[in-house]
Image 1: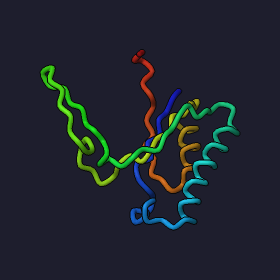
Image 2: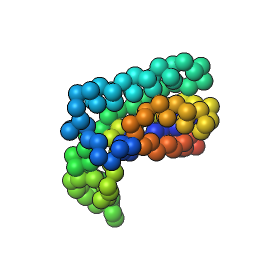
Image 3: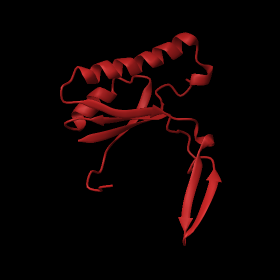
Length: 120
């Protein structure tokens, strides 16, 4: 089954990549390497994709109402937490996905199963 892990925020609300020391940034990047290694050690898990995202204020929101397309700048909704990135993971079950995503220690991770019933 596929699971997407959204890197929603940092465990420490006072931490920010922009203001982090070089050592803190290196530790954060190391957690991504640790995640990759942990997943590669499991025969039943695979990283299918993942990316870091820009801040929500660089987003473009597309809305379609009555056939009319409207574009607005900024995030979809006001939120105190934004999505900083994501990983798409193949795992046998939610327990395995949680085990793998928990390696990403600096982050709060929202994990959702992918709905494979919709083909496209």
